[in-house]
Image (cartoon, rainbow, N blue to C red; front, side, top):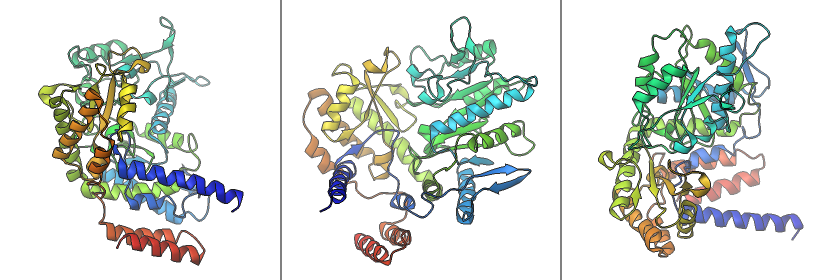
Length: 478
């Protein structure tokens, strides 16, 4: 056996072991993750993988700089239309390859937009941005240390970027204090406002905010980073209907897609911020991307068709499961963050305070040893992430694999045994997972396998590959 063959056999053995552990033995509760359907996954090996389709609007026409792009051009337009259907909006930019890139594109574009009125030969940063504090659940990408880096002016009094954080309620730091928000809004008059979080339990007060600024002559751009709740749009919150200008997000957390980003809006022609939308498009390309990962773009179209078909059923089950999970965790002696009076959570996330049993990282390690995968989380009263006293969980992936309210109750009991009593339940968790091996909210397995086998077989020029792949995949669907 050659050296290359040895390396490949060793590597693919590890790949297979990891696949088996994550997909057959584990309960995955990381709220920023999901497993795409076989149809979405198979798109990532199809011909668009590795191809280019750079394009931009020039003199009113969309100009492509590569040939052989007719198919993927159609796919991008269809994906835009499908995502606009999902969000009930007018515009969609799909070239960002991550949620963080989506945010950075918007930050670049808003900075360019406000400079349209700057004196010739000058270019300034954003004077003030209002966002969620990182320590109170705000997303890293919406911080000066993240994608907002270098787009905000420095406050001479503090020596730091001039970001004003949303105030939170004293009795529930997972909710924004709306009255104090309005006071800060009037005082600082930000040019950009970024709603949305990574530790996300409740809707954001978008309507109260936009109602307050609707008559301002120079009102701020209102952006909502929905990365974590992209797949819950409408059932959880519909920020565009509440007056938000822009939604950004990643397409692989609560949404069914591959790992990509997207920006959507209602900035159609003749609307107030139309020129801002043109700046967003130009910052997507050539400003931030060249090859925008065309195989995952194909997968995003498939995933959006799935979401549009199953949106109502899926979203209702996710929200119901999350509340049932939170209650069962509390009933089993664990401290659940949020307000018990309204079900602890309005999203897919459930946050636990575990410091009585160990710091967040230690508890996450202990759960992983028992085949339950979560991530540790700093809570609002923690000083740093290094001393996190919580863990963050999400129900979306396991909901898609068929878990219901009663199943999450059984899982809550297993987790309590690990966290509180430090029991070893790894084998019980693996046995429990065997009940949830079939993915929902997509085509039936047999139909999926037939389509996937054709796509995989046609992705390679050699007939030997075609015959082997088609035969092996078809046998899996029998």
